[in-house]
Length: 344
Image (cartoon, helix red, strand yellow):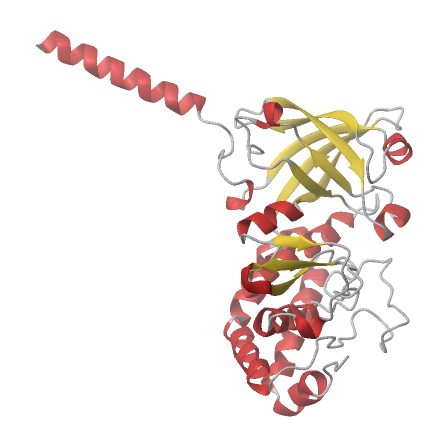
């Protein structure tokens, strides 16, 4: 019996050790369940990917995922450029990445056939800070609304094949959930090709969206013209705005930020409420919701303080706090939100 017990203990310990050693570096569940930064390695020619891809043409590439032992797991993918302003004006183009089922099985990407990849815009030393602030905006949006695109921060070891030296660069970026995956989470669909007035959307989710846009200082969106906005159609014909692309905002305030000539402000750090008019009780309900979440929203900014310079962090915290001062002041709230809402 003692001999049997000894064998059982040895078998149990070896089994546990095997399970521990074979456990993957990242959970194979939902890619977006964790806040842990993912280490990726990418290598391609920036010039070629601009030249050889478009909205419908991908190129075959390889990415590498770093495991807990520091080893790089090779994953075949397809990449193409995407976007408008950043594609034209940034050194690093934003990308769309597709992964075939057989190549993503058993990896952190198992449930994600398609993803957007956000890179820094420029090669400047502080380019990562703008990525961190845009990522921060997505995290804040998740705090105030359930209808959002999920994100996951990545640290990219990048080799640009245009560089004859083959120098490795470390870039900050993030992955953005695919449109269809968002729709599937809510048993809905993304409407394409239809112009829909913001006033026709669900009141509470829409006003949460509009307060958030004012919070981060964003006027660079339009649900009617599908500019930096998607429309989610839910069961019972409910329409929900889905916001994305927050680089051209007062919160991020990158060097290339510019204000549309369609809005009456001079710079992106000037706030302007662009939501449609709703019943007064809707405005008040969302006002209360945001005020109750003030500490958490400011706390989200502090979560990414390490990516910013001290002066950038102070300015970021101040910019967010200024919005809550509007909500706390009845006269400012009336003037800058309630009376500023759009009727058409």
